[in-house]
Length: 506
Image (cartoon, rainbow, N blue to C red):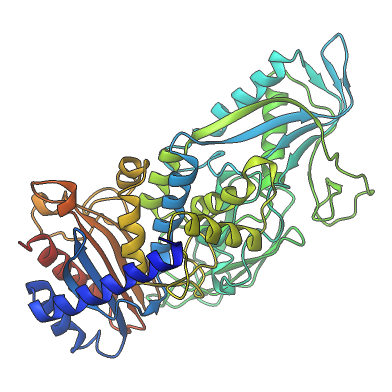
């Protein structure tokens, strides 16, 4: 059967089984219908589909409606990557050089850190190693090649991913925060910077804001924020750009609050990485004399982020010394889904296009994602429109029926067990830590799902494993809500009820 015909057949089956579910009036169908007729869902938009086996539909409401899925997009990003690359895939970071290495071990030239898109370098999730551990591996590559000192520069090479690394469809208000920081070819600490914020003693005065980590002495900061009256809202924000080492703090920070950590974007991840590795080498017996730099968008070596350097071209093909590998994709995918890590998800989205020596751009990554979904028999068509890999863009639109089709397809993938293990269960140390708090562990342990939320959006999609029996009895579900203005906790409690009902279906 051709892919188009197969897709049409699946959609027809979903339509028929939705009608069957509405005719059967399962307990969950009645619950979904009841909630959809009352606030807060009545004035919003909801798409629901839950199926068991090949034709047993347990709940169905507007399954073809394309809705903003928020971080449910990560289900598709990690699933396609695990299916295509395998759980044992690893990102590589290559050390390379220009010039020559003499008999005394002196590199008379520049040392390049050629990024392979690894999002975990000096990262904070469970699978990431500390910066010193990673740097020790890189230093060993130098030692194995007889390099004892470096006369040239340490060059952070992030060219695997073209700029801008974020997509223009992300909202401007998100770009200054850590969750709006996008990965390049070479990264450091998830391209994030932490600031310590303490209110001034008197409202109207700027709060005290100090950089904590990483150290970025090249940055200049303007503090236009103000200490607000006690018990007012914290609206503190940070504005930064890739076009210069400047950042500005804006908004209100209430008086009387304890010291607070503001997590912001760092637009110079490769530069920061080169700086920290330069310092590491000089502190560990490998003198590096030439300083550090990165590569500008135009392809020039850049020590001065104000773009005032003499125009020295970066080498296109420096000589390779060796490659250090990241944690396994299975581990990275788990951290992506458990933590709902936008940075990791975007790095995975990039590598789908960038593997095999290609370079990634936002457009090429989207095209490659569409191609890979089609190869899996899941051509996006009218049911799935993806802009990014994380779900941060509000121009992502996916239907509940497409999520169910995708999740069912993953059950047939060689990566199925690793994919299932990447999805958290309610009550685990994850974004689901407080979900289904009143449900017994016997139910919570059977539910593996991904949450997705942003203003007016709350979505959950995943699996409910059978208490006993074969995998064919697994319930695959997607519950998407958009444009709901009620409190998040109210909508979350409704979805909890639906999930508990699904888990109890006979």
